[in-house]
Length: 461
Image 1 (cartoon, one colour):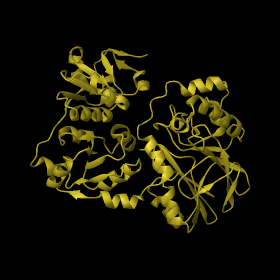
Image 2: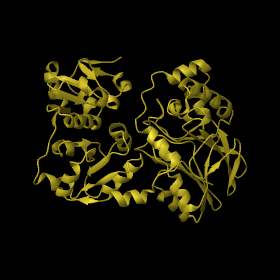
Image 3: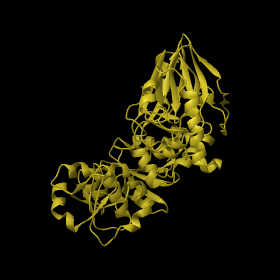
Image 4: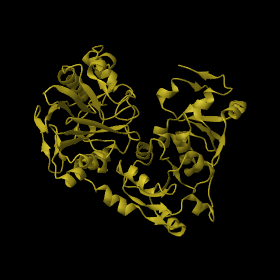
């Protein structure tokens, strides 16, 4: 028996490959499916089933492509209503994979179709539980992502989730492994652990949903209190996962278009086109095409693209380092952004040789400390980060809400921007520049550098 977790850090997402005696299954695959196919090929195994824990909101699953390539059925739990042919399993239904089995455990609450899958080994002994977004390590799935389409309140879904966890998961053996669909950083929960696998027994100690510390009403209140707004692109991803999408190979063929400067200029002047610069933030700072939005590949790229650009139908022009064009298109496709018109052939060097470009000024934390009383300082971190320390005269405008609150930032000021380390602040700087803010200064190293500088005005709350 083989159980392989395939974890994608950019999405904080875990897919799973399971194999036994020449047969295999995949749970919650990513859109690009070559890794699962290669795993099966390497052991001469046949992918027999593709299991989906629910209709994902934060990424495009590879279930349809993988099913097409392997002629294997897709399996959802009860209440799922996809627009394509698949198996809608019954609660407690068992599927054999070689010498092992997968039992369907319907656990609604995150969504009404949310389902966990219990793997039993060759001796019918429970080995692990694939929990999707029902149960995370240290947390549970948020109950507000499906409510609008279902006409049901987040409080009602939270109550359903409480019952699912108590009645269907907590009764399982303590020694089984818990394999969730996401880890810390995902917008599908609030306070997930950084670990990606744990025992159910330990979760019964550390997870508030399992340790008996909260009544049902207290759980509902805890789960629904202070939920941040979900990223705007989530409903589009649910729709694509439910109704269908193009295979990644088609997206890549349509998007991998090298554009010389003249063609790039012609396209960037079209309506509803965004130039997306995916280089390192330090490279972007030194020179970029005016109007570009920066979201670097070396970071939480795909989720920030969805949160900042929002509309998956937006036409995109890419600026990236040579050789990374395909990776950028791949990672855009993971969250449904398939409308890439092409990329600047030769990278930014082909532009700066003969065209105007913009820059962003930066300042060290030590130099900022000398002028802190006279500047407009904007903190774009999340509220939870800010609660662990901030500068007393800083204005908090979280990057998650930045474009909605940009009017609160005075264009006449010299605006100094910081996040935790410098990635998100550069995204914010690019948005300000795109919206006509001329004087934008990035604080190099973010709050990490501020903590290690001459500042003595950090408040902890």
